[in-house]
Amino acid sequence: MPPLPADPAAEAAAETADRGLAVRAAVLLVALALLFLVSLGYLLYARGMFERTQPLVLIATDSEGVRVGMDLTFSGFPIGRVRRILLADDGSVRIHVDVPLAQARWLRESSVFVLARGLVGATSLRAYSGILDDPPLPPGAERQVLQGDATADIPLIVGSARELLAQLAALTRADAALARTLVQTQQFAQRLNEPGGALGAVLGDGAQAQRMAARVESALQRSEVLLARSDALLLRIDAAVARADTRVLGEAGLLAEAQAGVGELRGLLADTRASLARVDALLAQAQAIATDVRGASTDLDLLRAELEASLRRVDQLVGEVNRRWPFARDTELRLP
Amino acid sequence: MTAAEPAAPADRARRRVAARAWLRRPGRALRGWLRGWWQVAWTGALLLALVVSPASYAARHRPAQARQIVAAAAQTLAWFTLLALLASVVLTHIVIVTAESYGLTRYAIEMVVRVLVLELIPLAAALAVALRYSLPAAAELAGLRRSAGWSSPAMRTPERLRALLLPRLLGSVVAVPLLAAISGVLALAVAYLSLHGLTLWAMTGFTRIVGQIFDPATVLVFSLKTLAFSLVVAVVPLASAVHDAPAASRTRAGLRALSRLFVLLLLVEVAALAAQYA
Image (cartoon, rainbow over all chains, first blue to last red; front, side):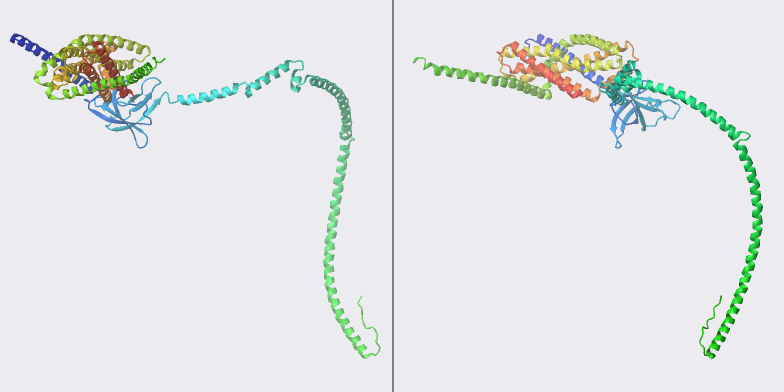
């Protein structure tokens, strides 16, 4: 402990010094308290605690990059602040945004909200109001957020590129079909340039190709001979055709005779038709005769019936005579 | 041969004793190490109990408390503020130029605030107060104790704790947040001026970014960290002055207090980082 002062002057000096110290200490403490309070007030102001706000709910499918306290911007200016982020029962994300009343005029019924993620930097929440004459957005309005994600397609692209590269690698592998085909095409081209030429390339064997070439040559020679003989044959056929033409189509040819024959045939047919007409008449007469014969046969039936009745009576009479005549003889009477 | 035989058991006994002492040495060191930390914790608890006790602020204690508060703050405030200002200017300039070269200017303020205001300045303030005030104050107390011949329990009477330890504790506890707060505000001002120049038109955007950085969790961690720094800086050297044997080497005692101080500051910093970013 510090030693106590001995005389009153020293005691007064010490007391003055103590008072000065106390004032300085109080100033320091007050400064600390003021700093603390001012800092707290500034932070509360910076976090928007003294602003009157209206709520806005943005509905998104993914909350990645969204954090509490981040800004909602309009034309690059912050006009709202994310207060909380909730996962709704239907799996959607509900982003509650506090919009200060002073800034709420930038949000209209037709405003569009976009959640944009860049390749570098934080996610940003933006509002676009195309028609500023529309009615203002009511407090507590719920809007869908359009998500513009520059990185969303990257996995898809990377996947496709990987697949493409794998296929390309498979295509360009040394034992791949393409490489083998190219090698064989090259061999084929080389053999086309060899002495055997295309034939050798097609047949695959030099000696056989030469043999085949010789055979082709002989076949060509034979075909030339064949063509010469065909020419002669054609000349003969030509002459035969000329003769046939004279015979068939000439004035005394087969065709003229046939034409005359046809004329005669036509006269013959006319005669035949007349004969047939006469036959028709004859047939008509024959039909009439037949009708008469049918009437005569009816009369014959009557006559036969009468004859049979007469014969029966004769028979009865003969039977009567026989009964009365004692000589037995054949009594049967036969009709012709 | 016969003369050497009686000497062999004595030799063996001596060796056994030496081996036992060698084996006991790590145990003693561990016990000493644990006792040292326990004394720090115990002294800290005693002093905190006194801090919240109204009797500690009786009129007769106030002059000593005022003296220590003024001594702690006045000794460090000017030069630390100047150094913090210089460091802020340099670091802010580096960060802003780097951010501009990568086209990331909008993140420069956030980085300056996070690195400088939240991390570096509180740690630097704690170290400054420790080196300029609390370690010398503890050494002064140890000298006073040596000259008066007080034992360790004699130092821990409530009256002596109130009269000698509590004022020095209050000096450190006030000085660390004060330095951190003043330097933090200066660093924010430097960041604003470096980025926007002498204009007030960018204040809205700047305020908004500051508000986004200092969310409630960050403010809580920052406040607790600064408080913990100030308590560590205040308690560890005083505990060493109270508990270490008066005959012990002053340098050795000071080094032990300094190493404990660094370890605890590091632990607090790691815990704060884990709480904020993990």
